[in-house]
Image (cartoon, rainbow, N blue to C red; front, side):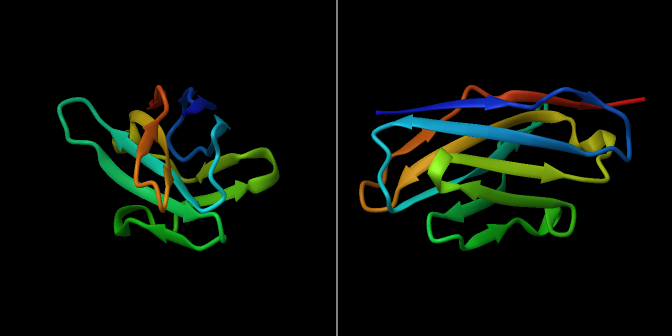
Length: 117
């Protein structure tokens, strides 16, 4: 199994920046994808970004130019750098891990990001 521990969610003012982290442990497969979703109150979970273990990345159109995903394979950690945050970015942010061959997805517990003055 894979365990995911997220951190970095907090209250931030509009226009501010924040970096989320997610550390994976357990049965880590070398060929994998890690990434981020978010879910605002009353809405469906929304895909944000993903990164393959090769370093290749993919973003939702809604966050291109503001959010950047990166990873440190030595630390089994994925990051989400968010800039120019707005109140509509308020949501619970979830990290995921998938082994490409195994095809099973693990989820973190979620971390709350609140953008408000």
